[in-house]
Length: 373
Image (tube, rainbow, N blue to C red; front, side, top):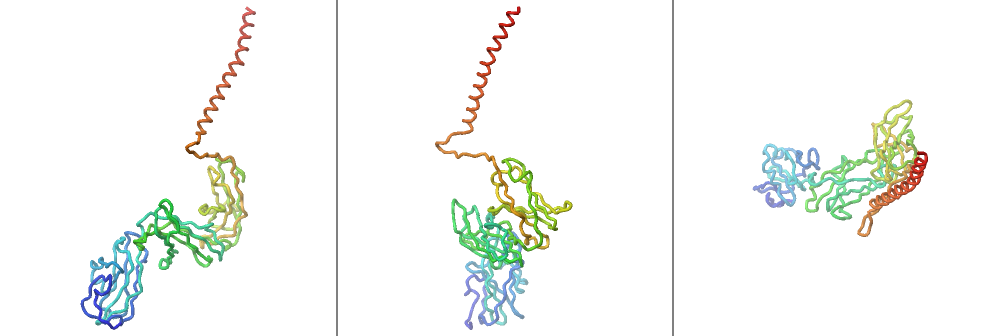
């Protein structure tokens, strides 16, 4: 404070200020991004610097690289503290600060604003382990996976982009990457919706497309218990058509079906009223060994869809008769061809036996016909 400062003495200054000013003698401004600081590629955004009254000039700084794009903004907007970007690209990403000047005095620098551009890479996959259904007060693991070898991942809670969690990738295998986040304790008082992004350490403010939205669900928060049944029965053969039916006399707007131990195996369906119950039918056609397991269903209401009823009693689905696929290797046999050969040989033997059995009967009839004549 109190030292003479020129515009070029700050790294990343977008525009030079040639006159000497008294540095840092005014309160620091606030730097905002509208509509937000995490923006998808090609979308508009405006950086807005808000200072005290009687501001003569606003300046915008970007760390490491000058914000050269500011030079093309109309000066009428800059004087009011507006720095609009009509179509954002990865070139606009970075950490920004702003400052204002009034009567040869400069303000302190604003707190930093991280401007993030998303959409540079394909989207990762976000899953909840062991399940997105989490009891009130419980913790859950969120796993972000990608086939891209990212250096790190970011977990963002919907509505709280300014406080994302960042983690370096914890595993790299065959060009893929993964990070595991811990979330909780979960509370029914608000929604718990998340997306994750991947990024390269060389450009930490340039992110991938967002993962699909993952919402954590809190059971036991609304009245009523649904009932789960299966048709044609709990024991079926592989390839059969099966339907799980979730019903309740309580009014639910939707039903959720979960499979124990399968993080992604949950289905949401709107309920239908079929006198005297609300219900939803979950078809599984045709069933395989992957469908075998323990199922439960929950009810929810549209007012707070993340709040669930208590679960139904568990239903065990048993799938039998699954065809085994044997691994192929350098020393393995083609079992399908072997079986065809065996069936062909067996058929040939049956044909020969049939001929041998039929020939004596035919010869005897021929002799009897000759004797009658």
